Length: 182
Image 1 (tube, rainbow, N blue to C red):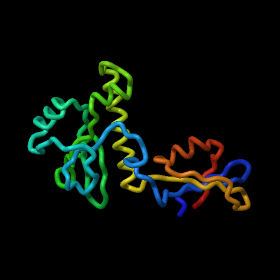
Image 2 (image 1 turned 60 degrees about the vertical axis):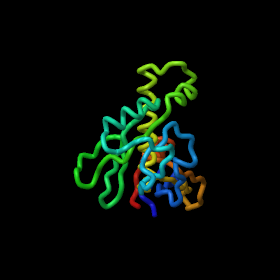
Image 3 (image 1 turned 135 degrees about the vertical axis):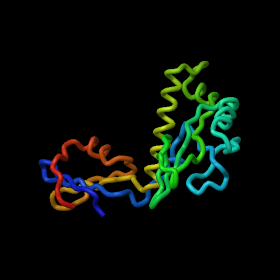
Image 4 (image 1 turned 90 degrees about the horizontal axis):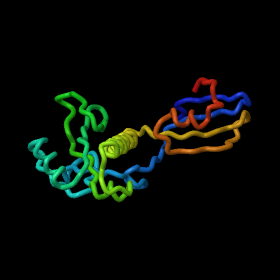
């Protein structure tokens, strides 16, 4: 079912829809980070061995640091749907910390071909990790999109899927400026 439609000057129609069969970014992409959560986590499968005790955030973060990880906390909000973020949601009833998103410092040095992790590289790594968690959040919420491009007669000219934002489709097709009724 179309979410939006746009027309270009030639009369072609760009039809944007939710991707009916999106691929999990956890299985088809090379991710820098991994989820470290409890084995029975209902939101995401653990991807690295969990070394956490989940009793004290300070103690867990010391364990992660000692084990050689760069990490971000992962929070979940579960109320009529699930949202995941590296920032706290602030709702004491329906949200809380799920675990951590981690990457071994050794992997960072190897991936970025560096002997040392500078503050600027660390900042860059944290931004990549945050982006990976946001992309997984898009996936679990069905916020993955695609488009079909049709000529003025309704003949399909092109299609493409796996967009994580509708804006990315429109950026790829700036000639479609006129929004039309769905």
